[in-house]
Amino acid sequence: MRWQNKVLGLKLENQGSVDEPEVRCSIYAHEPLEDNFLEELQDEIEFRYNLQMDLTEFYTRFQALPSLSHLIDRWRGMRPVNFSSLYEYLLISIMLQNAAVRRSVQMTQTLFEHFGTLVSFDDKALYCYWEPERLREVSEEELRGLKVGYRAKSIRRVTESFLHGEIDEYELRGKPKEEVRKSLLSLYGIGPASVGYVMSDVFHHHDEMEHISPWEQKIYSKLFFDRDPEDPAPVSELLDYFNLHFAGYRNLAVHYFWEDLWHRRMHEPVPWLEKLIRL
Image (cartoon, one colour):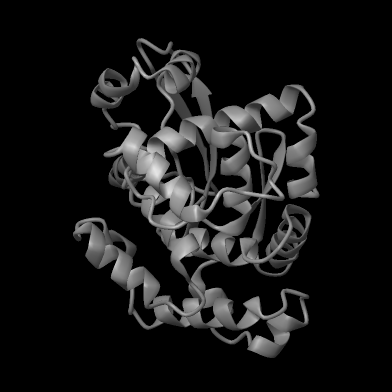
């Protein structure tokens, strides 16, 4: 993690239980860190990982819903988290656009190798993101040379927005939801699908569900209607279903189904999903 221009290694460990959660965070750095730095870092980690979220109302409303109750029992305590800054998350969103998962992984790995910082700690070696300043002198042509395609222009333009102070993550945290959406949509190359991810994961708007990408449309059609992903339900039908059943927590409710699916894939084959991932 890069925080206040310091490169850090973080190790988070479970020290509690679902009923009495506690997380231990070990921090690795090149030099001793001051107390006020650590306090601010703790606040930032708690925000990004959504640790203060109260799930009581969500569980009270949906515990009796048959389709969701067993997932709540299985994943009680789960909430969407984000370990990245807004800038870093937007770059991830750009890499995910119009690409199979394998391609997104390849492009992101290439960017890390050229601009990231490889950090070794606790017997791990992981890449740390770069600050926008790192790309100030990097041209669109240079980025295209790294095989990211048309995304090179989006990377340059989004980076410039941060360099010029046109967008400020911490200021946006205190803004109304629709003002945040408007600011995000003003960024070059950031469309409704990317904004939906940012609104829920980065800014914790748990009812965000205004857009469904074609890839998600196929997955949701199978999950909620058991329809062939190659013949998906119309987006309007999916949105109506979410509005009817999960109003107030649409994104969070769907998140429970989504994460359960990917966890299941870790332990057993999900053939229809593999065709969509191509990893």
